Image 1: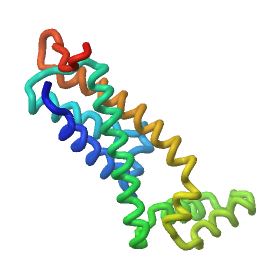
Image 2: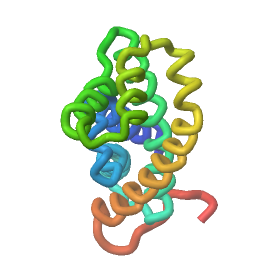
Image 3: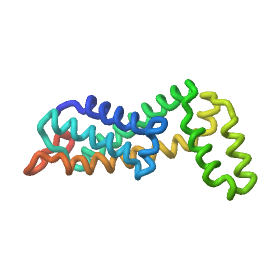
Length: 167
């Protein structure tokens, strides 16, 4: 059975880069960056090895590439935010400009305080821990969906022989 690690890492890098900073807006469209990473993983694996994979195997590869992408994306985002490149400020500023007049005063004040709050890694992790955990679950699920779709898209024709020794 050919090794899947390189393909999963490639898919994770695609997913992670598309989930970083301003590119992360791509994931607003049904986690499109995560699905693209899962598709890249399955495509690479099937192309390099000239074989097809079953949907379940593609889903497993997609889920793992989504998890790798989640880690890569968050690490890159932390690096960018540490350097002062903060997409969260741009989002909040846009929201204030677009909807500030119609916001309740408490919500407006909370967004202004968030914009003025200095960035620290500890603060980011503490504020985002539950969000990070829930995001990881969503990313794995969407990666699995993308991998299953990729298994169907990148079939090499005929019956699909399993590369899984347990199948």
